[in-house]
Every structure is written in structure tokens, then in C-alpha cells.
Amino acid sequence: MIKSMDVLLRQWGQERAEPAREASVRSPLGDTEQWMGGGRSTGGSAGLGLASEYAQYSRVYQLVDEALQSLSDLREEGGLGGRGAVLYTLAKVRYVHVGEAPSVAAQLKELGISERTYRAQVDELHQALAVRLKGALRAGLAA
Image 1 (cartoon, rainbow, N blue to C red):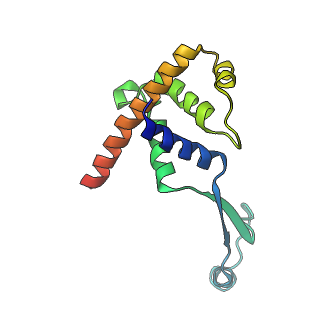
Image 2: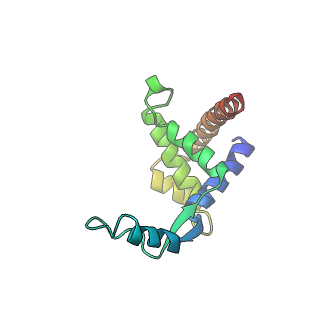
């Protein structure tokens, strides 16, 4: 297990389970333009209403989430294919929860694997994530 990857994945899981909430309110100026500029819209959806709420994720969450999702990419595209999907599922089971973390035994039961396989997959997940994050950081610094 790579401790730094475990810390990042715990933060990712916590934000995924309970994201910060942001709310926005429609601008009265926008309503005025709608009425005076192009007229009232017809048909379609009613829009967002008076206020809308959305999840606000940190940059760390976004970076880790992109790296985890890239694990499932096809091998030709640099991903791990089906193996990456298994590791992504492991990450969700191990790190995404509200409140107290489920026991290892409960995780093993949900995943349907042995403890030895579980430990090997956690190591593989951490190593694959470290490689992808290192690549993402290098690409970000080069840009």
C-alpha cells in the first residue's frame, strides 16, 4: 500500500460520498433581457427555476477521479481495460462511504474476493493511480 495514494483516495471518497453544495440564484437582469430582448421562450424545459444546487468538487477530487476513470480505458488508449474497471470498483467500495468505513470483511463480501486478492488489488490500484497522477502532473506542468 502506498500511504500517499491512500490519503488521496480517502479524500476522493469522502468528497464523492458527500460533496460540498453550491447554490446559485437566477439573475434578475437575465429575466429582464428574456422579457425585453428576445421575448418569452416557449416550449422546452422550464429551466433551472429560481435557484439551482450543484456539487462542488475540489481540484484534487477532479484529478484523482479522472485518473481513476482512465484506468478503465482500453489498453490501446493507455488504460487497463477490464482490469481497470475492477480496480475502479475496488476504489468505490473501499473509499466511498458516508460515516464509518465498512470493515474489510464487509468489503470482501461485497467484492466477492479473498483477503489476499483484496490486498494485491489495493496495491495494484495505488501503483496504477500513482503512475497516472505523476503523468497528469507532468502534463500540467509542461502546459
